[in-house]
Each structure stands twice: as C-alpha cells, then as structure tokens.
Length: 188
Image (cartoon, rainbow, N blue to C red):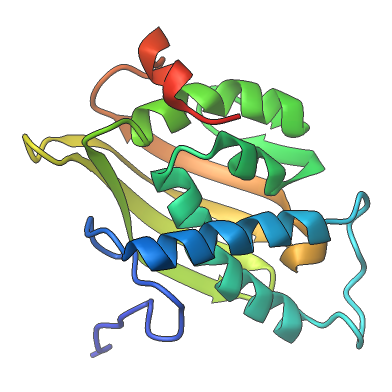
C-alpha cells in the first residue's frame, strides 16, 4: 500500500489547506513571483544539458508557492505574466489560444476564487520535469461553503519558458462570471 504524501515537504510554503501563510512570507513570495516573470523569454527555450528537465523541475517547485499566493492575493498582473505568449488552454468552455485570450476568460474565475472571505487551497501538487498537476478547492471562510474545486495540468518550462499549456477541469458552485465589484478588486 502506498503511504500518504505531504506534497509540500520540499517547498517553501504549504498551500495544502486553507490556512494563510505569514505576512513576511507573502511579501517574499510575491516579490519572487515578480522576479520569475522578468526571467520569462519571448520564445520557449529548448531543453538542453545547460537547461535540463532537472533544473526546470526545481524552478517549477520554487515557482509553485508564488503562484498559489498570487491567486490568493488577487494579483491578476502576476497570474497573466506567468503565461507564455502562445499559451494553449484547454477547458470546458475553451480552447483558448494566447495569453490575452486566456487572461480575458480567466479574469472572472480569478475574481471569484480570490474574493474577500474566500480561501483557496491545493491539497495535491505533483511535479515531473516541466509537468505539474494539482487538485484545488476553494472555501468561504465564514460559511465554510465550497465555492469551487478542480484539477489542472500545466506544462511550464521553468522561469525562462513560463506556462505554455494548461488543461483544467473545474466545478463552480456559485456563479462562473464574477460580479462587477469582484472584478474591480483584482489588481492589474
């Protein structure tokens, strides 16, 4: 029988449950996220001996907590910046092609998932080279109501390549389009 795994053992922060991280760690993770975005190249870098899958996987493990915190903080500017220009995004109402098309669709989801009094958690995250898989859920802090849940697979070529393929399955238990006041809360 396989033993249960804490998927966050080797990561800088644990986002497996809807508990917040310290304010100091939030500042560091958001700063790191902004740094990683500036490392993104316009074309997808090749996997070579100098830029190996081992290095890419390590970069993805460093990036993951910054991504989680950017979502919790409603940092649409960071979330959009995590994508390669030619991103391919497969989901129930897709496909979407390109960073702009994806961002235009996801802005409503980000607003719902990052709204005040809602906390997102990612109990499962796995890494293999440039592949990441996660399962997530989102709860209302006061009512404990499940707002949404889902899973996604990302192909992310480390900091230099960013996320270039995303496939998502999700279920929203409230509206799929955000109210205007939630959209204004997101930072762009």
